[in-house]
Amino acid sequence: MSKTTSQPASGARAAATRSASHALPARRVLLLVATRKGAWLYESDAERKTWRVDGPHFLGHIINHLVLDPRDGRTLLAAAKTGHLGPTIFRSEDLGRTWKEAARPPAFAKSAAHGRTVDHTFWLTPAHASEPNTWYAGTSPQGLFRSQDGGVTWEPFSSVNDDPHYRTWMGSAQDGTPDGPKLHSILVDPRDPAHLYFAMSGGGVHESVDHGGNWAPLVDGLEVVEGFDPANITFHDPHCVRLCPSHPDRLYQQNHCGIYRLDRPGRQWLRIGKAMPQAVGDIGFPLVVHPHDADTAWVLPMDGSNVWPRTSPDGRPGVYVTRDGGESWQRLASGLPRQQAWWTVKRQAMSADAQTPVGLYFGTTSGELWMSRNEGRRWKCLARHLPEIYAVEAAELA
Image (tube, rainbow, N blue to C red):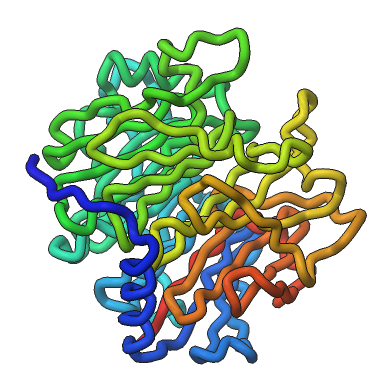
């Protein structure tokens, strides 16, 4: 596949990009909050000062991901794990007023030799703008699925699920994260529907340039836990991979072993987290990229000490921003708790809108929903006492 390469938005180009964004009409913002016991929708105008809450939806059900289809602005898909139905997908064509269950949710082929079953659908991604009604889904244990009818029916996508190499790299259903290994971070190049990425925890980052016909690992430069062999893709544990909307040849990654950046057509990841304060480190789960400036990204680090407590470092949570592609980082904690706040943030639970200035949002393991109207310079708690938050997506409505 032939792709044009360009330099990331910085300096004059970044200023021009941001200036152009000012001309865009302001839009309503919709936050889609998925939790351990249901889902909530928060809606505001472009000022983002007052919010209307709608929920709970699916009270008591585990909702791993809730996503709005940007191609029509009204269809919602919810990845659910229910007590009596097991793993499924719910669909709404009216922004959550009514829901229907998928007729055939993601499931491994019954004839597959591995005998795996889907524990839950973990990640949902709308396909390219030129492919209406097509969606991708990643599951636990690791599986890749596609729907071509708006999420009503799902089929295994490509050969990944049963490919011998990928099955080896996936490990067993008991490996990986505490609630099971996952296929996540399904990314679609906005310039080319055939150019796709996905990541597996564990199992590395992978790329296809032929619409899933073939995949190739993309792990050069990534570190693994000390004592393990980085040549064995099984041991690679990407937590979250993001593609820059303003510069799709740049990717950022929050990994089990650091923060990285990749500039295509290169294949070597650069560990930009080394520039983080040593006392904080560069271990965490979520990562968000600025919608208009590829040099700007935010992370929310966690305590990555040897015992992996999975809390904010020293009970003092803080968001860190880079505005120079990872060469330096700045702490943004105004309004956040200064002490005794031991929550952390899951990989899907941090998001950004496309307003000017950009709004940032994250949800915590203790059920708090935080927001910033000014790109992280000041934080405000939007909601408390929700169930443990699994995912937060910011969408925009006409």
